[in-house]
Image 1: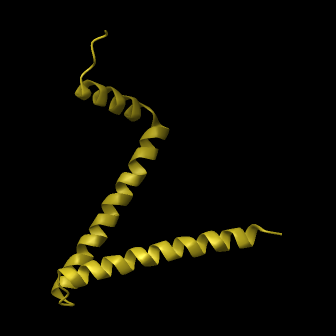
Image 2: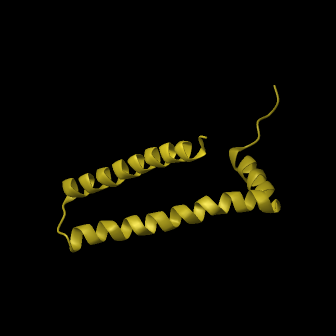
Length: 88
């Protein structure tokens, strides 16, 4: 039975591989930067809702639910419009 490499060693090898390849590095950094920006906006939204709008935890939950529902509806509409614009 072969000895298993440690998880840390495997992570280092994977990170080294990604950092050496410019395409993979770009593909890894783009969503990382996008997630940081998204979280920054969500943090400000939470502070704004709490301090300016006086929304408590249940209200903020409803706000996030409305945000997610709008995103889902927007994705569905975009998919429908994309198919409709491509059909002959």
